Amino acid sequence: MRKILKIALCTLSLIAITGACSDDIDIKQDYEFEVNHLPVQKSIKKGETAEIRLELVRSGRWEGAEYYMRYFQPDGTGELKTEDDLIFKPNDLYEISKETFRLYYTSQSEDQQVIDLYFLDNVGNMVTLTFSFNNEPDEGEQ
Image 1: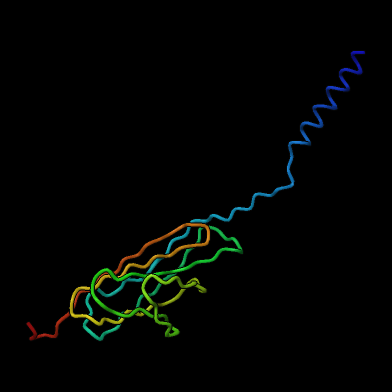
Image 2: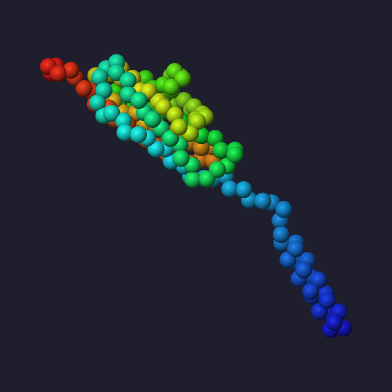
C-alpha cells in the first residue's frame, strides 16, 4: 500500500510540475530608446534655416517596434521639415522610418523661438528634446 501511495504522490507531483509549464513565450517588446543629436546653432535670423541631425538609439531590438515624432512650437514662428521636404504640422504624429535623419527648422520670426520634439514608440515610451533659437540681428542693427 505504501508503494502505491508513493507512486501516486510521485505521479501527482509530476502532473503538477508539467501542468505549471506554459506554451506562452514572453517576448520583450518594451525597449527604452533615446534620441541623440549633434550640436545645433543657438542663433538664427528670420528666413535662415538650422539643421538638426538626429539619431534614434534603441536599447534593444523588437521587429514590431514603431517610432513616431510630433512637434510643438511654444515660442516664435517657424517651419520644421524633413530632408525629403515633408513639412510638419504642429501636434500631428509622423512615423520615423530611419534611425539617423535630419530635420530643418526655418525661422519665420524675429523673436526667440523654441521647438519641442516628442518621440514616441508604439508601446508608450517617450523622449522629449527642446531647441531654442535666438534672433541674431545683422551687425549695425539695433
